[in-house]
Image (cartoon, rainbow over all chains, first blue to last red; front, side, top):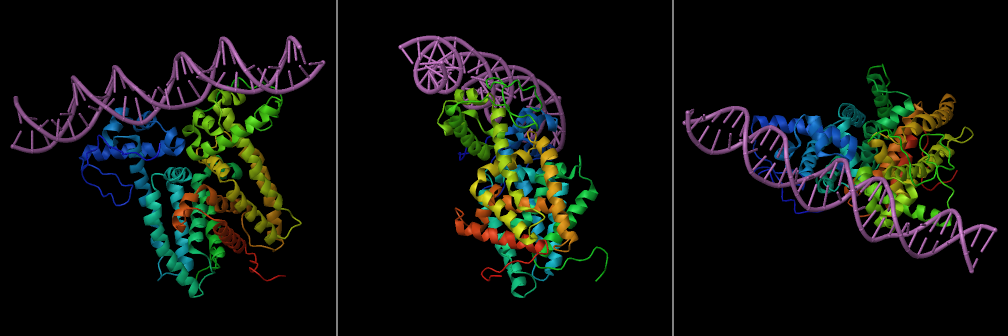
Length: 237
Length: 237
DNA sequence: CCAAAACCTGACCGATCGGTCAAAGTCATT
DNA sequence: AATGACTTTGACCGATCGGTCAGGTTTTGG
């Protein structure tokens, strides 16, 4: 159940960078292929989020995608390849939010934008967040190289920006790496642990109002936690 | 895969409260039973944490416990019952930390003690935390009644204490429920997402020093987030 | 010391899993 | 209309899953 040669049948060894250990070589593919792969990946995201890797069956994914099971194997070869392709798609979204952190920006504005972005992502793509969470909780066997290489470097780079702000006395001295751990945890919990959130709040579903409220609470808490001023709800500059 | 009659063979319907929908009726049992059940539960905690509910096989749990598979079924009947018993044991630990929150205490001291307690739990029982996380991420089907009843009430009760502190002007106005969501997320991430933490920090293992550092960061961040003073590292009253 | 209760376990069962494959169907290009 | 690449799919396979059970061994209480 761990490391395997990964012969990768079905999918032809054609294009695709193998830079990190994640991205899977993919044949060029025509129009039909692109459409069906997208349908399968969407279905896989839902089923993997609900049941985890081993709990998700190719049969269940196929039914959700409205295709016969053998069709999934035609496009992705193995369950593992399908899963890794999905993870790759999710990771691309995951790192986008980092763009808000730059040395030229105001710390409060940048961090607030980062938190709002991550909260919006938890709201719009909770299934993707759950797949990601599940992968890491169970050891991140598929994305560990990515975490140790790309993510580590990105956090170092963005962490240097934050340390710059601290050196300039513009925010409280917080270890940037632990700051990111906490921001990730606080924002993603509204996607990954949504059942718990809804149970405690007594809501069958979270409406937009509930989520806006949650976002305001997290932004305010995080800014104060960084020793930054919290902008009032309705008073300008 | 959802609701079933749950005939519960093997285990005799004897004692055990059915107050919430979780605790499983258990026969009185002798000395041997208590010892073996504990061994099985420990093994189950590790295997469920590593592989999730469906990914964990009774065979794997049995091997880890050093017992034949049929023995597990003798004591717990079904995989589901074993899992629910384990969850019940974990939930008991999960709520203990709430004891720190009381109206007679100082807000900063109480919240710091709460965070330290949860961080210590993440350190000492990461496997239990992962089982809990996995259960909630995948819909909390086994413990939803607990979340909506006992946990909801506890959060309301402890939230009232915090609202009291706010009304007295002793801390910033934070929605207590969201405060708990954030505290749970920040502290549990060091157990549930430990792979990510270690990858970003570049540590193969987290030593006590690393965890102490993390605890200080989280405590300071949380106190500031609540508008509370952060005690200096080594200067008394 | 002895019966009854508790405990133990190898062998087995039906169901479901991921994956394979050959044969048929579809499509654009010439 | 013919060709070749791409796509579709039902049927099938070995492995593993959770769970059962008969019959043995060990422990316990009087």
